[in-house]
Image 1: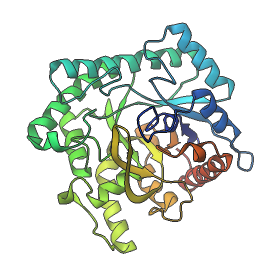
Image 2: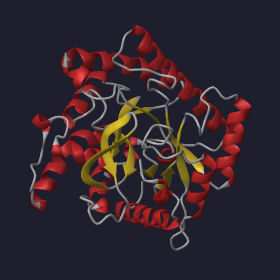
Image 3: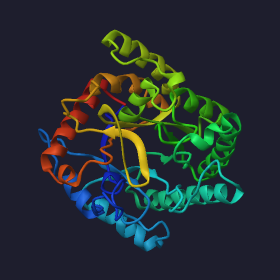
Length: 341
C-alpha cells in the first residue's frame, strides 16, 4: 500500500470567474500551477493537480500536440495529473443529462472529449490515476421536481451511456454530489441515481466535504435532512455515519474542503456549497475526522489521491501563498490520519 497522493484543483481559478457582473477575472493555468508548486510544509509539497477541461485553461478541441505541451507544462512542476473534469455543461461542449435527445447527445460528446484528453495525458505519462468527473449538468432542481422519478431515470439513462463510453476507454466516471445539480441535490437522490445506473465498476461518486455537509442539512431537499439546526456533536456524527455508510461504497474520488454552512454562488454557478479556507474560524467541519469517514477502504475502491477544492475563493485569497501552505498542512494531516491508501 502507498500513501495517498496530495493534489490541488486547478478550477478554483475558473469557476465563478469571468466577465459577468460581480465576477473576478480567471486565474491562468500557469499561475495556478506556480501557486501550487510554491507551497511547502516541512519538506512536503503537492504531488499533483486535478484538472478542468475547458477554456481558458484548456481548449477541449486542442490538437494532440497542444495537449502534450500542456502535459509537459504540468510535469515541469513535478506534478502528476489525477482526476479530470469533463466539459459537460450548457455553454461548454455538453448539455443537460436530463434534456432532449440533442442535449443528451452533447453530454455524451463531452464524455468523449474527456476520454480523448485523458488518453493523451495517460500516454504522455503525466497521468497514472484518477477519474473523470461529471454531474447532471442541469442547474437547479425545480425542473427536475416536475417529474422527479422520470427525470432521474432520464439522467440515469444518460449516465449509463456515458459510463459505457468511459469503460471503453479504460476510464471511470465519478458523479459529483452537490446541491445545485438536479437529481443529485441530496444524499438520498444521489444514492437513488447511482443505484439506478447500477454500474459501480464504471460510475461512482465524488464526495466533497463542503458539498456533502449541505446534504446533511437537506438544503435543497428538507425531506432528506439528517440533522436540524442546533444539532449536537453526537447528533452530527451519528448523521454523518448514516450518510457516509450509504455513499462511501460508491465513492471513488474525494475532495478535502471546509464549509461554514452557507450557500454561495457567482454568475451562472449559483446555490453551491460555500468552500472556505482550511482554517476558517466559522468552518463547521473537523476536516481530518470527517475525511476518515469517506476514506475508509479507499484502496479497495481504487482511490490513490485526494484533492483540495477551494472553489470560488476570492482571487486575493488564491494568490496568497499562505493560503496554500495552510491547505497543504491540512491535506498532510488528512493523509497521515488515514494512513495509507
